[in-house]
Image (cartoon, rainbow, N blue to C red; front, side, top):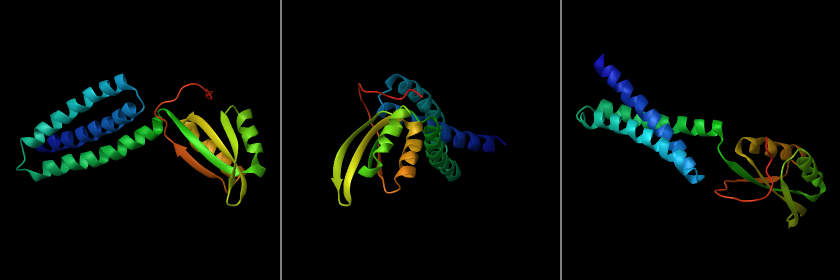
Length: 170
C-alpha cells in the first residue's frame, strides 16, 4: 500500500509541478514576474519532493516511468489550464476583401478597437485589420470576420508588451 501511495504521489506531484511550470512560463513571457516567482516557488518545491523519491529509487524503473508520465500529463493539463484562463491579449491581423469594409464599422460599433488600411492582393483590393483583444475574445472576433468574409486571412499575434491605444473592456 505504501508503494502505491508513493507512486501516486510521484505521478500527481509531477502533474502539478509541470502544470505550474507551464503557467509560470506564460506569466514570465507576458511580463508578470512576481506571480511567476510565487508559482515557481511552489513548482520547485513539489518537483524536488518527487525527484527525491525517484533518485533514491533509481533501481526501481516503475518510479522513473511514473515520474515521466506525470511530466507528460502535466504538460497537457498545464496547457489546458492556460487556455481556460486565457491570460493577456492577442493581436488579430486580418485581411479582407475591400467590398466587406462594413466589417470594420460593425466591429467598432461592438466596441472592438480596429485599425484598418488599404492594401492590394493577388485577387484585388483588400483591407488590413489590426485588432487587439483579450485572449478569450480572439476566437469570437475571428469567427465574426469569417462569417462575413469566408475568404478572410486571419493571423493571431502574441504581443509581449504594448502601450496606449484603445482596448475593449469586456
